[in-house]
Amino acid sequence: MTHIRAPRGTIDVFPEKPGVWQRLEETVRSVCRNAGYTEIRTPIFEHTELFQRGVGESTDIVEKEMYTFLDKGERSITLRPEGTAPVVRAYLEHKMWALPQPVKVYYIGPMFRYERPQMGRLRQHTQFGVEALGASSPALDAEVISVLISVYQRLGLEGFVVRLNSIGCSKCRPRYKESLMNLLSKHTDELCADCRRRLERNPLRVLDCKNERCAGLAKKLPPIFDYLCEDCSRHFEGVTECLTALDLIYELDPTIVRGLDYYTKTVFEVIHSGLGAQDALGGGGRYDGLAEELGGSAIPGVGFAAGIERAVQVLQDAEGGAIGQEAGRVNVFIAAMGDEAKLQALRLARLLREQGTSADIDYLDRSLRAQMKYADKQGVKKVVIIGEDELKGDYAVVRDMATGDQAQVQFRDLVQVLT
Ligand code: AMP
Image (tube, rainbow, N blue to C red; front, side, top):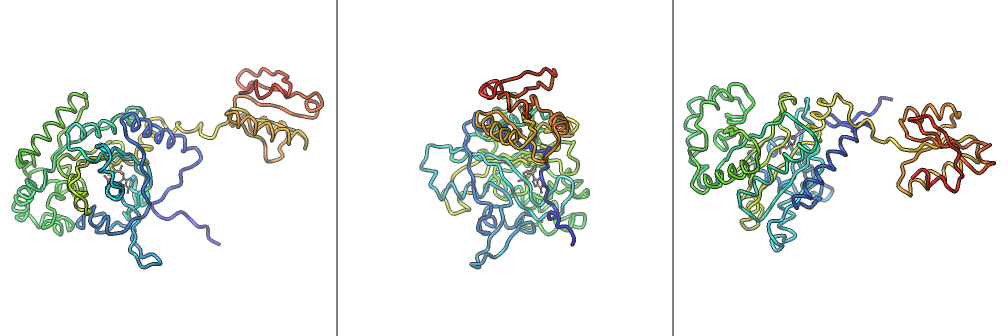
């Protein structure tokens, strides 16, 4: 029989890797908590309509990347491709607008996109993100950006660049779109098939198209800054002022438009050159029109989402794959010989674990020598040896693996000595 393999575009997180995943997740939790964000967990699947309305019909995600199916009740269901629309849905559904504003939440979880798998691009990937709803202050945009940067800084991740842009609002963007359309319609034969198709609905997408010829054209287009209305200009100035006050370095990049329709005003991406073609570590922006799009009132919001697998890759490249190898390592190994001693070892391991000390025993009926070798390979700090003599004398031998020192310890004192 052939072996069943994991579906294309998915990964298993191997035993030596959880260390770095956990470090990342703990850092996200700690940085978010310190900035006043609390965790939200939304369902893995939602009604398809949420993403059609929330993410936008003309986006790559909705057009071609969603895992959509009819459930047994004939409802159209979609595995979530992103986290913002679900959070805004939850905010409206649970009347969080009645809480003190802004409501600040963070999430960590899997996202699903039917993309062509390649390095850094998976069909199931994991994102962490924050959303701050109910306030339109530019200081909140800056806070969101600074939270993401703090996560990377706390992890010791280096070499990333923050790229910032504004894509205006429903007042000023149409004027910019129109002038892009006018300019680009003279060059339709130079555009890739996707951009040609999207030109009518969303000419902004040409700006961030990866196709070489489209990128060449994009460089010649006027930046949106010249078209922003007064409100958007002032907001953008406010954001840059706050970022400067926070000593956060950023680059202005008029080609950052983000792939999702719901953004307004501020948009940003964090890029890392070590990632290759898929070089975005994370990105986000303001989405003041999204709540209305989902049937709520005009609730402003801003947030980011960042890929965990990509951050793990950068960290591992930087640390030569050495990180995470300590995962699963226990402090104490109890090596036992004989049936009675093995029961004693089982009991002792449980006691130690209950007292907060990690401990393990042999489950393969190895010889004492082989157990010691195994414990050494696992890198444990102490080995407790229980054989027949020790059982008779009501004691165990405790060996310090770093120094090689050994001592006899009475059973009743063992837990105290080892914890
Ligand atoms: P997006 O909302 O598309 O900007 O995604 C946010 C972040 O999630 C990106 O900056 C990536 O780090 C990560 N990401 C998005 N799509 C994928 C994917 N298919 N595979 C791996 N990571 C992804």
